[in-house]
Amino acid sequence: MAKIAMVTDTHAGVRNDNPAFQLYQKRCWQWFFDYVDQHKIKHVIHLGDIYDRRKYVNFMSAKRLREDFFEPLAERGIDTHIIVGNHDMYYKDTHEVNALEEVVRGRYSNVSIYSVPTVINIDGLDIQLMPWITDSNRQVAMDAINNPKAPILMGHLELNGFTMHRGMISDHGMDRNAFDKFDKVYSGHYHHRSTVGNISYIGAFGEYTWHDYNDPRGFSVLDTETSVLEFIQNPHKMFRIAKYDDVVNPEIVEKIQRTDFSKYKDTYVKLVVVQKSNPYAFDLLFDSIYKVGPLDITIVEDPSVLLENEEMDSIDEAEDTPTILRKYIDTLTLPLDSGKMKHFMMDIYNEALQVETV
Image (cartoon, rainbow, N blue to C red; front, side, top):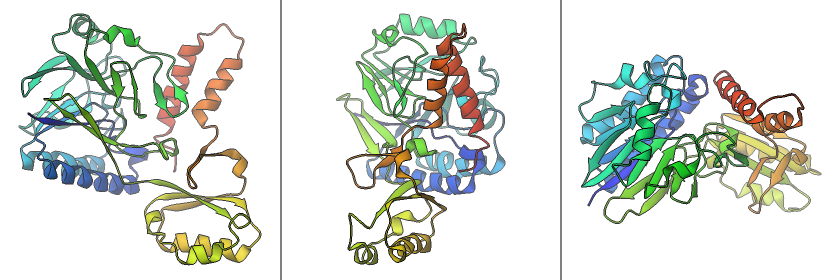
């Protein structure tokens, strides 16, 4: 019996190689290896997008990933398999140049890199590894999908009809029925965890934008004997929302004074003002959060731009940028393929995130 830790979309160098996110990822990797040690896991499969930038790898981000991920794997002798995701590739239509081949291959004896579909065997279980599909590997990829040589596929897939982020469903990509011949399919690429039929997106490792707020992140562990998949939720947060309402909570001063605000340290905070009649209490809350050392505090004076969930502090953005873009495209009467246009706009949006400030 073996247990395989599956992790995906770790995006080293995310947010323009922001040092705050590098430290956040360091904490996440320390938590990951604590679990690996405790549960004696000897196999790791990374389902793609280990790097974030397509065009180059920042030296500091490469150093961080080496120290936080590759060296701990090597020190433990963990059998590691990494497939190439779309963010790992320099070109969009070929795997010819990719970060894993140029930076990682041959450097660690315990790490194998896959840019073409390959079947591996772990503890007697055959697994079809499927990297991002492009023109350069499409023929062999489709042959592997149509004529399976393993009951399980693990890949970096773009499938139609799955949730990419909460409230954002993909309207492009391959049809999921193409994978009906596999018992189970586990994929990276879409950051939201979801399952439809035999296909599961295991979800991104951490939080990288406000779209990830309050959407569970982490990694999954597959038991090769029982085929049970267990989700291990990442406890580390990068984004938090605090709500202020001194009308509903008239004793808010006393509540603030006895609250531990340490969870806001090293995070990006939105302080949402629902109702404010006591300036002293509001300043006390702001100062209490500020003193623990958040990365940034944004005051939202108009809560109508946010949606409130059942939980007290679970408030999400009502309409994010991708939603606005999709709705705008739907209003156009030009002779356009709306699906392709939405895909194109999302590519531009994701590239823009590389230079966006948090």
